[in-house]
Every structure is written in C-alpha cells, then in structure tokens.
Image (tube, rainbow, N blue to C red; front, side):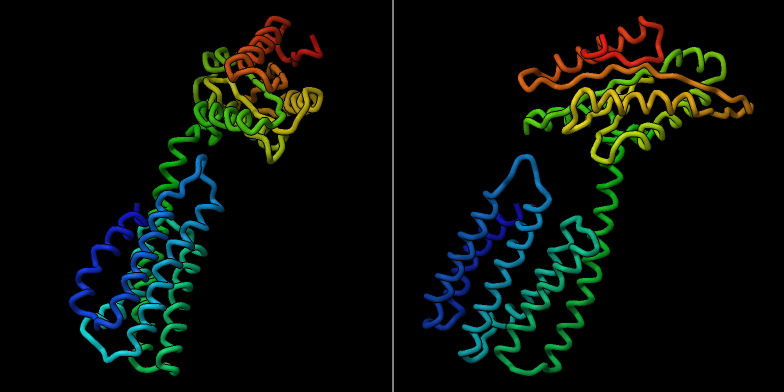
Length: 329
C-alpha cells in the first residue's frame, strides 16, 4: 500500500515541477518520475503467500532503494542549474525516508540498517555535489540521526505490541504452547509442502480425578509439568501444542512412525519419573496415553487426526499409560 501511494503521489507531482523547474530539466524529471512510479507499482504488486521473512526484507530494501535513487539522480540533475525554490524541497527527502520507516514494526538491527542505508545515500549524494562536509550537511546529518532514533523507538514499540498480540492469538495461556488453531495451520503447511511427518496425540490419564481430588490448581501444575516433559524430550524442530483440555498434539517433521514411537516412549517414561508438588505439599504422579501415526501424503487433515485419535482411544481402552500405533496394534 505504501508503494502504491508513493507511485500515485510521484505522478501527481509532475504538474508542479512543470511550472517550477527549468524547461531543460523537465524531460529528465518526467522520465525519472515515470520510472520511479513504474518501479513502485511493480513493488506494490509483488506479494507472496504464505509470507516469507526473507522476501519481506528484500521488499523493504527495494522500497528504500527506489526513492533513494530518485533523490540521488534528482539532486545531481539540479546541481547543474541555479537553485530554485523546488530544489530546497529535495533536500528534505532523506528526512522523509527515515520518518516513513516508523510505519514498520522492525527489530533494532533492521531499523538501524534502514537508517544507515538512507544516511549512506545522503552522504554519497552530497559528496558528489559538494565534495566536502559542510555545516549544512552536518546539521542535516544530526537531524537525520535524531529522527532515526525516534523512528527506531516507534518501530520497536510497534513490534513489541504486535508480538504480544500474536502470542495472545497463537499461544495457550497456561502452558505457553501453540493453541489448536496454530496446530491445524502447521499441519496444513506441512501437507502443502509434502513434508514427511508423524503425529503424536497425548492424553493425560485420569486427569479429571486429579482436578476433583486435589483441585484445579494442582491440575494446572500437572499440565505445566507435562509441558516441560514435551519440551525436553521432543526435538527443536517439532511443533508442540495444547490440543484441548488435557490433550496435547506434537507434529514431528521428517519422521517415520518407528522414530516417533521412540520419542513417544521417552515422553511416557519421563512421566513416571516426574512428581508434581501441590500447594498442600502432596506429590502427584501421572501417566499419559499416546496415539502415534505417520501421515500418508494422499490423505487430508481430517483423516490423519481421526486415525491418531482412534489410536489414542485404543490406548485408553487397553488400560492407559501405553502407546498405540499401526505397527504396534
């Protein structure tokens, strides 16, 4: 949207330059503005689904590069003619670029890099025109650094707010794991990319009895303890989330059923070794039933989840505290 607005405003400024610029400069500025508008229009049409951070960095870099090159070329063209009122406005172009950066929720390193890029273009442009640093250039540099600092603070504030909103929308507040919606999205992404994967569905045994006997706070502690077990026993590339109530789902990319069974058994054994202390100083032990399955690339999410849920149901029927998979039935 910002690139599209820039393209429109770039073209709308042509009539003003037609009346204020020397006639000899007008063909060059007309070509320059049309070229900039075309580049900004192309950038506005460049979208990707799903979004990729690397491409977002490239698009942001191009968004800074296009007007910066416009500033460089326009300044060089104007330097060959006596100063006019309009040429003074181009001197504030780098300040505008730095200020626009405050729109984006950037990290500190990304914001500093963006400010540095604009500063570099400003210094290169003025070194080509004036040769040496003048008082006016140093004054503008100080102002650019001041505005850049404000822009960085604004960018970081936006990023912090967005991260908080993202966490609230994607994380389970009790365990800090992904919620059910994110798990389904991750499953769909893996399926779209045809990644081999296995799925583990966990259910804490007799969890209702824990809540009824020791209270919901004790049940919450059990859920947190099991979360730590999952985070320590599963791998960094695995996607773990709270599927609902006392059920947890783990997506294991590039994993066979046999490899998933080994990881599931590690989780099950670790549950035997963990004791949860309640506020009444009672020590609770808990077990878990686990369904394990490997994804068939020709099946849908519904079939995959139904099958692993059936395996979990069989584990419950067999007396709980066990693992059920196709190869173990």
